[in-house]
Length: 365
Ligand code: XIL
Image (tube, rainbow, N blue to C red):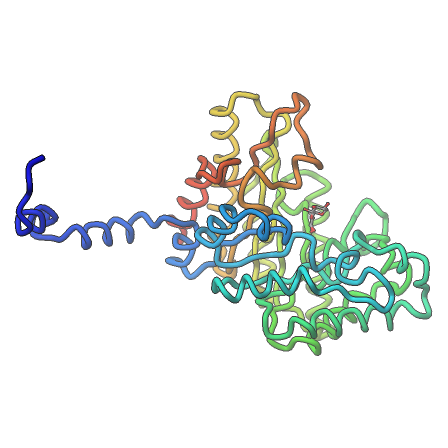
């Protein structure tokens, strides 16, 4: 083996007057290694939903999560059925673990969610009625949002309250909460959340706001009307979460309509976050290359549009890796092949969708 004298070795890392360190640094500045870094350069947040069970069990996943994400949404661990399993019993164990994980790794945390028509525990269904529902709701929100006071960047206070197909003149979903309390449950929830955690941004969160199809056009209008009336009443609401569960084969995307909607929301002095993005691949070819290319294209087209709106403050995907996605169960492919809706593959390696998200952040102004 030839022994290289020390001095020559040191010289070898000089590249035309700059050191290797400088070259790596400028390379990194031009091409950061993580989605959170791409987002941060534009003053944006990138993050993902994750479950306590996955982050606590899989160290490699946890490591990749911390590398890529600046903000974490507990996927199910703060929902009613998990956190409030019995009338007088709260279980903060999983949420506390996630809050501690977030703190230790300097991640922000989202709260999801305080009022939803799903994940209603059996005891609540059986005991709630128009007389007691308001006090049950208030107690839950005070307790849960109070427990995490100061730790939450933004709460999805009310989730999915609009369903135009339910036939209500304002498009309100006939959820159990609506049936118990009428439309006031929404305002009540925000007021109590503001009291319980005055530091958190309070969001209304919903899906099917993305495409130029009759149902979604009507839903955007109903959501906008809801937000307008909440602002008029002085409800303490600070933002809209657009879930963005997108469809790979869907082509009826209209950038102008979506931009107009976001501009209308922004004109109400509301912030906007993409809270649950993924692109389901049912109906796309089996071939990985073709499938990944289309999924990536959808990510880029959507985010390029959304990120034009200055009130957008961040983007979260509903999961980081194809290994852990709700779509495996909720939208399986007809050919039973594993689904590929997220930025990282099952081995936590970046896919084309990762590149697309990075490109969208990089090209946003
Ligand atoms: C989903 C979870 O990912 C699943 O694990 C669970 O079985 C059902 O809920 N909109 C939301 C999220 O606001 O809470 C949902 O999460 C996905 C759709």
